[in-house]
Image (cartoon, rainbow, N blue to C red; front, top):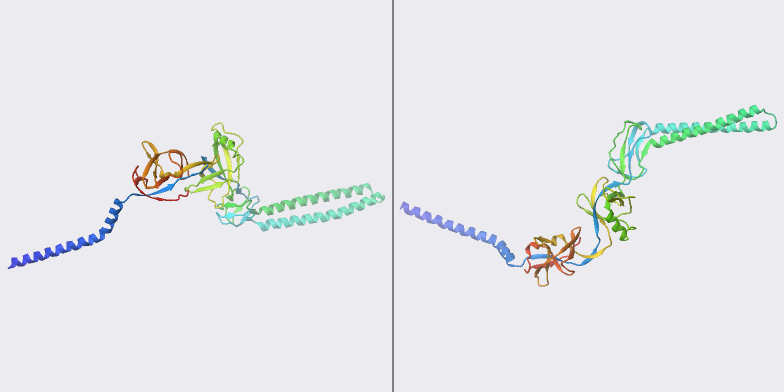
Length: 383
């Protein structure tokens, strides 16, 4: 009887286990079936690719150079008078405008000195006026024989001394005014100011050195070198009177398309490198070009010409060379061997192998094969 009960329990547990397995199986089936169906459907369908319809467009040849960004104007501010620094009137690293007062050095003392020199000048002028009258009176008396020549000579000597005293007073007043102007150090041009190297309360003089530096941020100058051959091509292409058009690549990879507002070449070619220095000024409204940095530049070096270009992602390469894949109206892929021209940004010039109107695969190239059918969607690619 005991054995019979144990057999019944075993059967019950086995039935429960089978039911549990069936339940788990149905649960997994309900969870996995949609994904499996999608994968099977994807595997059974044609590969999906993106294509671009190529066309001839204007392409300008360029030269790749490395440029050095320079400030057109830069200045180290130094004191011209001595005294205690009363005020530092700017925020470090800010943009200052031409004429802004940046440092103040004991202005009240220099103002008082200027007022004193002005009073001395007024006194000298008053004395001169009195002595001029006395000289004219002595001259008139001498002409009437009422005053001796010695008295007239003495009056004339006093006149000359008074005139010299006025000139000396004027010079002293002008020097005082210059010192008063130098008591305020102003920005000579608009630009970005750096760190204040001397703080308020310190004694400064002409021997103190630099108080702060200012660099002009807009416009900026980029210096680069071009070979004698490249310069000859530009001069012969009729672009000698045109501004420099360039694509400037910033250190973070961003490309800025711009044209110079002024440029000039050096007056001779460096015989050691067969290059000539070119200086071009560019607007820098966003202050993306920082003086002292280096940038990659692509300089337009000739007249525009018609050419076919594709995205560089459309170009494949194997042991036989470069190729692109095209798709016809029926969705059939064809491989075309191509010859490459120059690279322009993210695009590549194709000199032979395809023609305008061809649909070139730009995404999904690894899914395509010569003679294979694909599902293609045309896209408009902007550089």
